[in-house]
Length: 82
Image: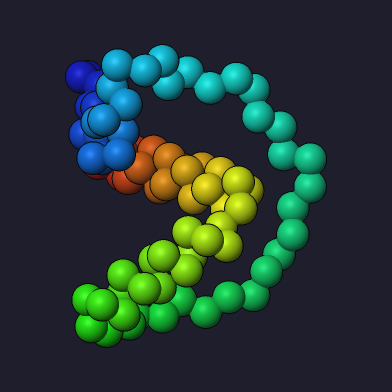
């Protein structure tokens, strides 16, 4: 059976020449957080403004969480496709 490869997203395509092998990452604790996912509509200018505000307050941990979540989602999608 052939192994399927997941196409890289644009962000990862830009990094295709980098060594994407990660060192060991240990989960030392977890916290359950309540959140609400919203589907929003807004003007482009409002969207741009919110993105800028988010960039100003985002922490390194926010970026790490986003990257890990995205990687896990892509991995799970690749398992569903095979």
